[in-house]
Image (cartoon, rainbow, N blue to C red; front, side, top):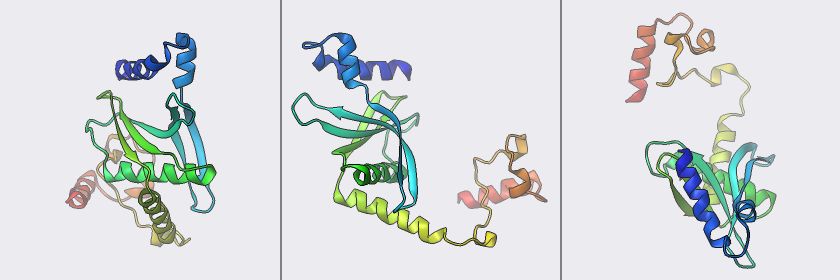
Length: 181
């Protein structure tokens, strides 16, 4: 993954090396990293992995980039929604980026999406939907939903008492199996 990322940066530096030193080229292609953006209007926040400016002309293109270690080389609906929310946050703070992308570290490849009105509207709708479903202060409105990533049986989860009190590991496995299907 490190090698893939190194080659990605090297390829981004290449067009600049004819007019600047390697150090200057590296500085030019180094994106803003781990940028926290918040929206009080949509009650959402996130750390954007990278915001990079691209292009050699007068008007650079802004691209929001998220790094993933995923085995699959695809932008899933969840990744698309995450990228849409990042584009919405960036638009709210300054302007909409031209593109959003996922850089798949295991593959050394980047997949991009254009930032469209529809992408940002879908992000707004997702934030509204979550907001509507999480306005209650009643604990019973938020039932426990253990999933396949829960590892309480191996002693790795500090929330055993909250989620599984009174349930045996076998009962938990059965519950998780039912929820998968």
